[in-house]
Length: 233
Image (cartoon, rainbow, N blue to C red; front, side):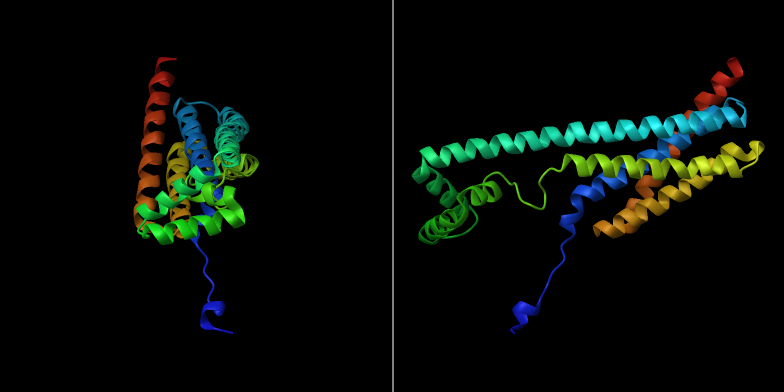
């Protein structure tokens, strides 16, 4: 067996679909639920009221994330399906034009015209729709839209993220609830940013700082609003 046959690669782009939905869901779960808890607690609400608000936020947020991701990714999937159907029709009625179109794409990528026509002809002979989907439309098996996967991943990750600040409501004394949930949630966000960056091969420090900053800003704003309205009411 040659060295080429023994060589295997694992590309991180294959994780795009579920990783994006997971990071988004968990981040939203931590930030929105922690902000809700901090805002309600800052309004001098009882611990039971804070807990009820947090649980309601978890359930509503998880369902919202699932529905939003499903609708959004389904729209992408419908667009891809429509483009593929149009491409399939064009190949059946204008095969020569479609082969020339594919060859021009390869010429723009650096092949000489003769070789580009040979490549286009051979690829279309094997899988014409697949060749055009990949090289003309940018649709591939790795990046294709998966609505159900995105919806389930987002809902589950949101629930897991929201459960973290909720658990702190049960563990923290009422007097330290705002500070405890805020600090704990920022730690959770930092860990999430680091894990997401590590899984996606990105810069860990930059991702951690970015996630933590926006989470801190969201909780500071809701705490301020809660304190103002709590004083007024």
